[in-house]
Length: 295
Image 1 (cartoon, rainbow, N blue to C red):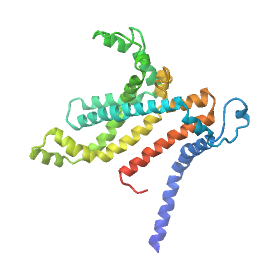
Image 2 (image 1 turned 30 degrees about the horizontal axis):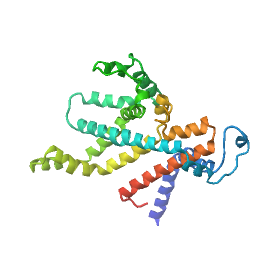
Image 3 (image 1 turned 60 degrees about the horizontal axis):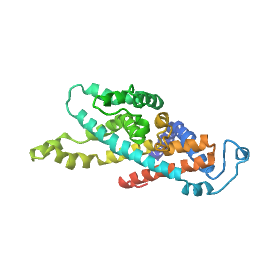
C-alpha cells in the first residue's frame, strides 16, 4: 500500500515537471497544427470579403490542390531537394566525417570545428553569404574558382538553381549528420572489428557486414529527422532564390508562404501546409514501423 502511494506521488511530481514542456508543446505545436486544419476548410484570406467574413468551404481547397500544377511542382522540387541534400549529400558526407573522427587523425578538433561552423550562422545570413559566392559575373567567388580551370563563369543560381540549393543545404546539414552518426558508431564495440580482422575481413567487408547493419537504427532515425527538417527548410532557400527561377526551387514551404502571404489566400495555404504535415506524419509512422515499435 505504501509503495502504491509512493508511486502515485512520484507520478504527480513527474507530471508537474513535465507541465511546462506540455504547455509549450500545446501552445506552439498542437494548437497551430489544429488551427491550420481548421483554416484549410475555410476561404480565410488577408484581403477582400473573405478577410471580413470567412466561411466554411469544405474540401474545396483540397480539390483545388489536385488540379494545381504549381503545387505538384513544389512537391516534386521538395522531393528532389530532400533526396539530394538530406538522404544523399548530408548522409554520405556526415558518415564519412563520423568515420574519419573515429580514427586517430591529426587536427581532429580543427576538422570537427570546420564541420560545425556552418551552424553558427542563421539561415538567412548563410543564404546571403552564398549569394555573393554564386552570383553572376567574373568577380563572384565560384566563378573566379572555375575560371582557373578554363570554365566559363555563369550565374549559378539561374543556370543550376536546384543543384545549388542542394549543395548549400548539404553544406549546412553535415554537422547534424556527423554528430548523430558518430553517436551511432560509438555504440559498436571495437572487439567486433578486432575479431573480424583476425578472421581476415577487409575494411569494405567490415563496413558492409558490421558497421551498416549495427548502425541501421541510427541511420533510420537520422533519415527521419533529416527528411522532416529538410521539408520544412524555408529561410535558406528563400534568401537564395525566392523559389525561382520559374518555380525551379519553389519548395512546399515557399509555396505555402506565397499562397498565404503573397496571394493572401490563407485557407488554401493552410491546406497545402496540412498536406505537408501529413507527409511528415507518414514518414514518422514509416520509421516506427521500420523499428517495429508498437504505438
